[in-house]
Length: 291
Image (cartoon, rainbow, N blue to C red; front, side):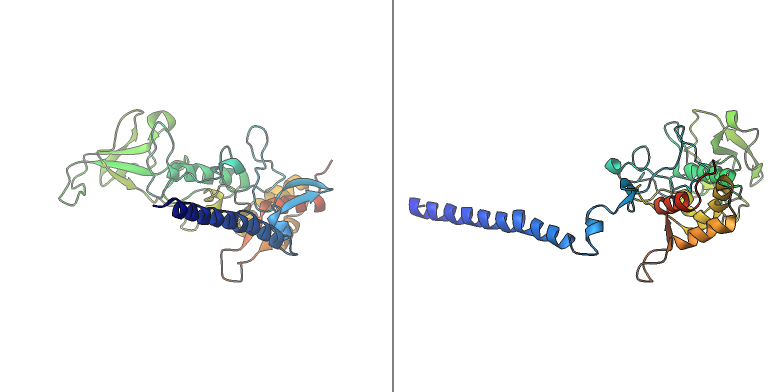
């Protein structure tokens, strides 16, 4: 290739680089920034910050934990849903647990998603004085799962169970298994460290209602771990506790919930929800704690 052609090609490439840098590296960001300053968009572009008396106290887009230093729920505030972002609602560690619906057997290293849900439902039920029982959960707040051992047929089903073990309940933590027998075989509680994976894993639904009082968002984390919203159903079961702590009527607290409830976006997208950060700020303003 002749030197003149080489210079011409490199000069064209350099001009393209300069033009694209000006357009995409400078012009486009400036245009987006200017667009974000328009009325109606400015607040969102700045993080939707909530201020009280001129002081930033949070964002409408990011949830917060309303707990004491020991992680116990503060009774005077509505509680958010669980969070898998860092130690909870950490914006620098946004993410989910990546545990799925088939994660039902506890291991020595960690609790299964099913047991986490069961334990959370039991804890919420005790805190809010409602029925915390849930399908596929034991009364002790762990996953109701059996390992059924015995000869199998060609499809892998156990033909004649010879041994049945409640895999998520070690003998040291329960007086007896959550169910006495399975297909006529006495159910044993698990022994710590023993492997029951060779058996057929069978979740047991139990007698809990199909529509438990503790809603799903009270026991599961959002995909980001930062969701500031809860369902109206979860807010409603907390109303009586908050009313007692604030020494006001439950109906007054429920009315405040209704005032802070948002419907589906455009009437069709998402579900009705309540922003917990904004609701708790409204609580402090309208019904301050008694002195």
